[in-house]
Image 1 (spheres, rainbow, N blue to C red):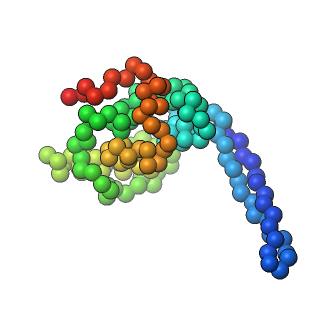
Image 2: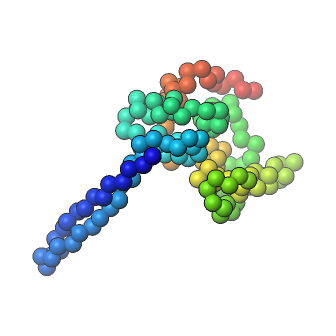
Image 3: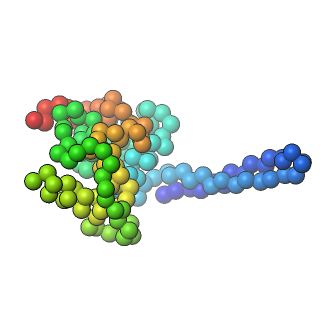
Length: 155
């Protein structure tokens, strides 16, 4: 569920005439059932305090979320595809539609092209352990939210 609020700002030009700028502020109150990972991470990002972020991580915990967070924050998990920008085309289908190293890269690109664009971006960030470039979620928050995760023994 989301709520929308319109913010108006009035300013004066040097000539003395008034201009009005409006900006829609969308605040998510509750996520829909079975949210995408990007929706969960966006929701966590919207939280103002570390405690609220941890609470949101706990509320929306599932296997896919914990797998993404382990992949990103566990130094013993090494991506089998090269670091850097991935040359894939974003999936242009509507939301909710499911879809040797050279071969591995091709399969990886095909997988990304079948995902929702925001989900594909998250996978690319996580592959390079760069989730924190987009989301203010730290390993400490994940450790506190999910104390049962075993770290650094995935070899």
